[in-house]
Image 1: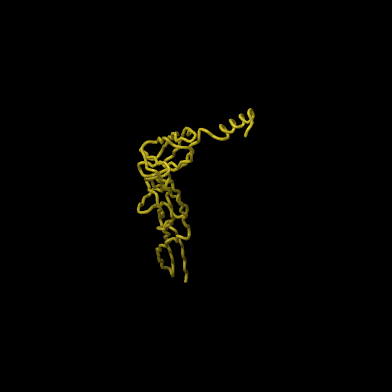
Image 2: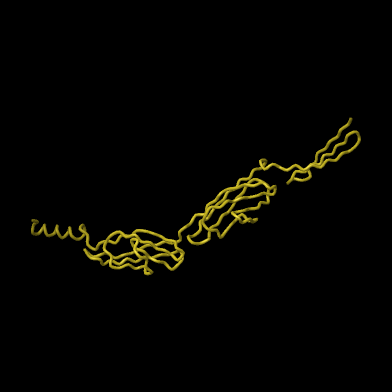
Length: 212
């Protein structure tokens, strides 16, 4: 018996083979479709996140995939799209998924952090010796105006200026309209110091008249 067989690949994405066989002078055609395995060309999915500003939905996630069979479909949370870039995202944890043309999938987790957009600093003059005379002024930028200002966990105020302060270390908190805050420390110095003011007077007097 004479058997002649030939194998032809006529499709690449889902592998289709055409088997031609001649057995005893009769020809038989057998068309078979073989689905490729996802393990043959596994996908690797990476997610890069950009933080969102506090109180806003300005985060971004960019998905990068290698392997598999293009084109890809991307999903982040409940949002599915053809683009690998997702924008307008709030802070939180998300599940990212990519599906290729063969239906193979890769999954990874990604977290969008919160970035505080407020920065602040303070300036102050020196407090007088034994008196509460210093004025402290806060300067804030970023976030969402207007701001409120709190000194040493006291009552917040709309003005960035605090007056009548003795020398010492102060904790200052700036809160914006979105409820985001920025806290930092500032030291109000004394206008009179022992090393720079009192000690030279004592030493000069002792040198002239002697000390008792």
